[in-house]
Length: 332
Ligand code: AQP
Image (cartoon, rainbow, N blue to C red; front, side):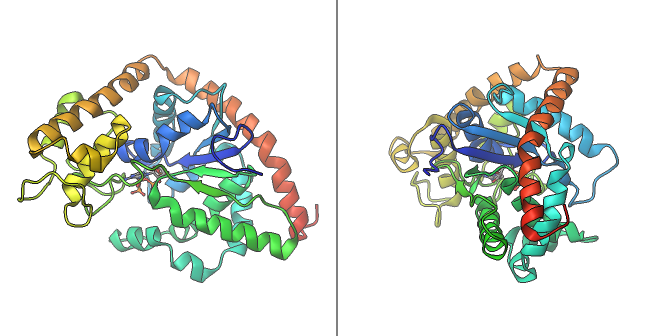
């Protein structure tokens, strides 16, 4: 079976954590593709609220974050008539299969996850066991839907590899049970870097307000952040991510926002100022319509869509969960 994302019959699944302001990296790396793929494939999209609990949260914070991000995803263009759109904790099969996946993933495998090393390394205090095991839950999220294609940013490559490995191991141990998924990483925008420290990816969990463009930023804020983006002193506009990470990041962002090619775009500029002005203008053009749609969405509508989405998701997930329980020999 073909698993190209344009295949009408391909099952697509992806998720996003309700753990902070959605930024340009989330949008260009993943969310923009979610919107496109909902019309081309059989798409299932999830707000992964259980994953948000891997880092300590105040009571009520995740619920509010879930509603906020749901509104934003609808404003970005998710259409609950064209895709299944729901919250992870509303479908209990995620946690259930997550446990089974912990029995299949190895300690060594989870220890090699760079995101765990990064996030636990940055923490100064409590490190939850769930931060270590969450790729097993992520594998469950994906495998529950017989997923063929997972649209994500480049930072998720290793986790999708893990989901493939546990699916293959489960199938080898207990017989064919899970579809083995593939990642779908965009050519442009796969790894948007922080504007202030372009050696780091733009991220929700790193405190870098000036380096992160959020989808709720005003045009003035976007202009200011892009104008102050770190570049270098040689003044040459060239696409060279290794020796010119800041300038190359701006070119990549412009390419992703305008469907261009970063190396070709570089030929059009001889100074950083005009490049920055064009990047800011392209981002404002991308973000303004999203913000306009956001104003029209109320919480009651969003909650109703999510309730309906959970029912539709569970109709797919429950038989897969039963299949997995039977296969691994639980009494059913
Ligand atoms: N900088 C990025 N460039 C391109 N894609 C990115 N994604 C995240 N950062 C970038 C993609 O966004 C999707 C949803 O992200 P998530 O919230 O589920 O994952 P995340 O990795 O937790 O997002 P953040 O912002 O990077 O937060 P932290 O720092 O907390 O991990 C994913 O498909 C991801 O690839």
